[in-house]
Image 1 (cartoon, helix red, strand yellow):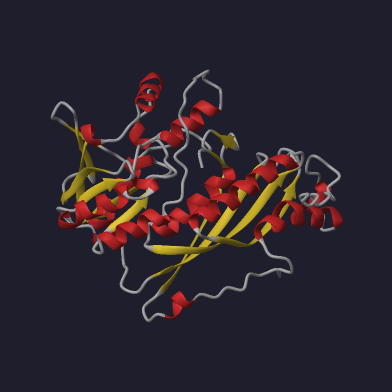
Image 2 (cartoon, rainbow, N blue to C red; image 1 turned 180 degrees about the horizontal axis):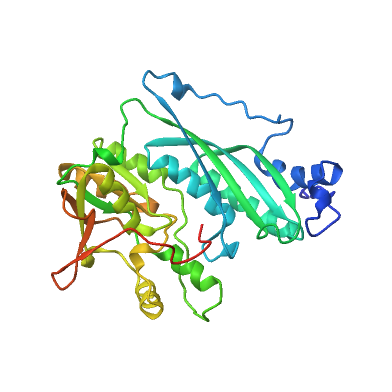
Length: 348
């Protein structure tokens, strides 16, 4: 039996033109062929109409987040801006204890951008949304003139549901709580740096970009008194720890020898004078759990694809003079401060 012939394309151009943002037939063809045919069912309206029984439970809460994504290059080992947008939004919901359900996606597209590139980005978004179990239900596109943006910017919003009784926040952290990360640190930032080609660096590194909602739900099931979680994106692990410690009024001490860092990331940072604690991650979270539930949380994390490399890196203690410190391999202490400025531009 012969496979059905592919639907003929109505798009006459290989690159986006200003006509694709003009509101006419060219715009309709671009939106339908590249975006809505992938994300939305036929006959969709200008607004998404959403229903979930999860909100009927007494005490359930609606979680809502939004974010914008700009990265150079748009495609990199282990991901692209579309994968980044879906995973980043899903993860912002997940670390708050929400089950992500729906996403919106809006695109700012520069005149001259290859339509084939847009198709790859959209296909990547659809793949990641399916992995995370979420739906992209609405969106928008705008076309701007050459030089007005860097090919493609994506803004997303995400909606999820927090189950009754789930209340994880940074200010719930207490002295004695154990600090766990789900995997290696700094891969995304190092990958983006190498992918730009400015420094002639060759590395097999790939971005850690991945959805973390299934992992987070496994942690909450195994360790119901989980205090707080944060995805260590811009500013890296160091900034996440500082923000959480300040909110809770504790000092977090981490162990240098416990930090999961690839040799390639360490080597790149040594060559360039960077600190891996400040490198961005896009599939790594840090979670605080009570000491008596730490082993259960670790086991649950390691039972998921995103958490196989989970390790304990430290614990929270009484408030000291600084929010975060690191015990070095030589037995001394080093202050782990917030990132000042930025190490790398356009990483997420």
